[in-house]
Image (tube, rainbow, N blue to C red; front, side):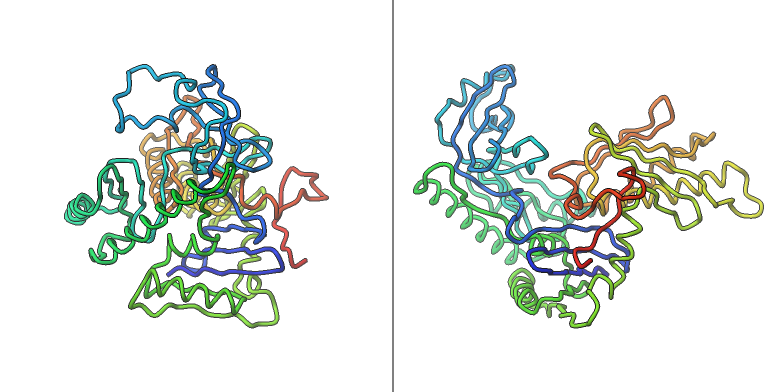
Length: 416
């Protein structure tokens, strides 16, 4: 069972996703400063840089957006040479172009945008000019995969592309078809606005943070949403009745005196899980350090000494197994992206190293953001990557500690 705990305070909305009572995702959004990810803009090309095979596009934000040549090319629409054409053959300064934000602005860099458009729905992702059908790899049963692939082929038109989402595994044709029609209408409205509005202009913004998460992860019949806002509860019920017709939505309004995060133990969990040192259930601990290039995770046995008859190898492997599970959860919770290097405690047996890597991979499958275990380096470090689409969601809500002067961070509640 999953619980979505939503806290609203002035201009700030925070949401924690709990699985069996444990925080696995946390995100925050200032209601007047919603993110750009997934938004569509009518932009104007400002600069074309053949040496970088990229262009900068004015989308009306503080920084111009970055458009790479691969995000302009559509090989299925026209025959492309084996060597990529110069970006200057595809775009020119002053040209208007519809773009979608692929990555949020990070630091001094503007947003990364694409012309490979996609509109996510409850049951599928609609791509107006992708020309292929894909079924989520998390749908394991071949019968379900074949049925959904055939259904997608029947429903799509012309050069449309569809990705059938995991939640569609047992869904009926009518619901999937209705979702597709809704997404087609969204795309029609985007194109209509692009024809009538000047550049730069916002054409379409994705749902709010809460609506996106509910759309993507809510399971009817078991999951529940708990919020401290009566108005938000009404909006959530309306959304769930739309995307999950026939199911009684589980939406509660919290009215207690203390904050909703304190009442459900979220604040205590975040204080521990955003620390530099995070303790493992058995007494070991991990240390997480961030650099500009990568994130480094160090695993230590700490107070864990294993069972009475355990050998050193068994004690070390058990600590590493606990760490693998916790690292995957913390990557989701803290939204750590980019390259991650894990320094597990040295293990002598190759089978134990394989077992630890497999445990980490299995936990990462629960993550909605793509992550890949690359393998062990020659120095015995485990290398992995996780897609980075925005700055760490917690950064506006943490501050350097006055005691450690920034070597660690702690969660700061906006209530205090």
